[in-house]
Length: 378
Ligand code: AOF
Ligand code: ZN
Image 1 (tube, protein in one colour):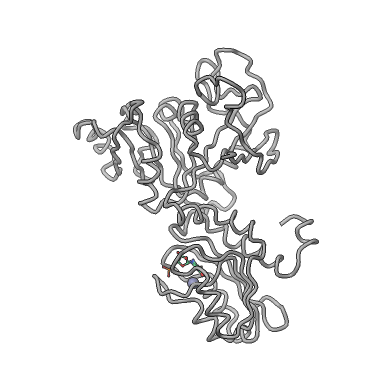
Image 2: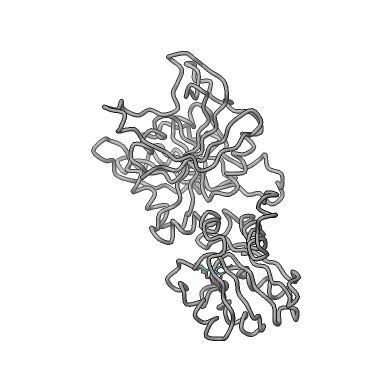
């Protein structure tokens, strides 16, 4: 929270911001569930319990906060960033516990888009004479749970394209030396993103040029970090089976064309028998249909994919309008060589009005680099 947020916020907004902070600590751990944080204030408005949802199947945020508050919950207020649930899923309904603990007021941010819960939680609370205030910092709530909201509505994961480029739009010199365009702090930011996304996806060319590990190594709280699932898009099976991305330490999905023989695929399984292989047919452009791939990943309850793409995959994603967010690190240097490699390979446009347009959603400087979060204009 910034100082301005703090100074300008009402108490409900202030604690809702804290719920977001609690919730966001669990990004990448709760799928297919949302991230949820909750705070119980006692009847004098003093925080008495806090909690967040740690993992699907584990206790909901409200339950942890109410248990921590104990007797102090009676006559108090529950603040939570998602409408409390009313259904018995892997855990019992939160509304039962809220009613039993005699909380008198519930302040939440977003209605739960899950049809099992939507508006039903609110109704049960009202029916039990509990005061309800909803939609507090609603927009920030959508942002905190953008992965969950996209998936629950479309069964597709949130797709973020991540690239780093120079001022003149280059990602590598002619000799393909592309490893470190941006500075150390920006690279640290990428590790933070990997720690929050369910999966990281790269294309075969990136594996061949950079041999990345795609793991989370450079984050502050390394003890609580975890590696995302790795997805390798290798339609023609050009990657080496002993590349770093296929190491056994982290789950891997290899995505390739259905035309390959089992024999060819077994080369990879010899190195790591736990690789999951997704075979997909090629489309009329002799490429794997990315939309179909994302739908397969959605079925596997993967809610977010960070695509660390080179120019071909990045270009395909933008051309086919498949991204929800473009995270672009711009390093203030110029490669200036016409043969240097551009960040996006997209066929030439016929006119300027055909360009792909983005809105600058967020921007910040990190060290001597600029980090842009761009959202496509649909
Ligand atoms: C909440 N608080 O902390 C979470 C909620 O299978 P279950 O029992 O864990 O239920 C999962 C659904 O419950 C999930 O899809 C979402 O609608 C809601 N998640 N609700 O009130 C929480 N994690
Ligand atoms: Zn619940």
